[in-house]
Image (cartoon, rainbow, N blue to C red; front, top):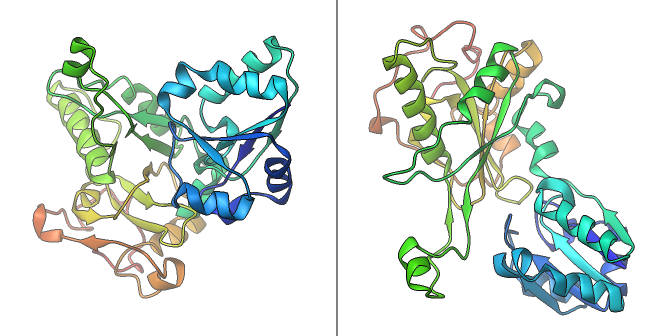
Length: 313
């Protein structure tokens, strides 16, 4: 039996009761540590679950997946996944491999960023395509995601940006020399995502196009969703450059057309809102408005402004 068990987004206590019972019944337990990270150490999970946990890094997930399938074939094994098991396409591959090996599969779901994104104040059924942003290099700056954003914007839909994670990655030099030397983990920040978005928008504008969004488009930055220090801040895309959201993981939402309730909810996440602490009491964030020139709310597109009742940064 192979169990794919979602851990949720917070800590060791976010596992469901059904998931916990499944873990405790297994002969081997693996923690997938490639597509996301949990906000606590592995030892916290082992203490609560009463099981030794084997970390499944990128190499094990991509190259040694058969080890997990074999463990499930010989007895019972669990693959623990941060968020929901199907939050990443990698885990569909495990289901296919298990079925090919005639291993029974049971999936136990949990919260993921794909539904927890509703915490930003924008309603889930009004989201369009989710978009992944990867780290740029000096020679590789992909922007194929722009067309999806443009489609979402055309239809008035919100866009969730999933930001890049680099864990146990080898540099090009290490790959060329065949060295098993890994670079330090990197997690894309909301600021880095905003810089990419603004650069691509400017490039489209310079080419004579009407860009799908501007520096004044309303966005919501989110960090460590589901954790005690969950931090959510709304503002313009340009303002996202000035806000430090603290440790990973980060996500970014670009608002489409908002109805009145969404506008009111999003406005509560302005840093200067008098009610901000009621929603994010343990937020880790600072704003540095002196780092960039701002356009006043009076000069912004009136259709994209956050209501004036909310305080501005």
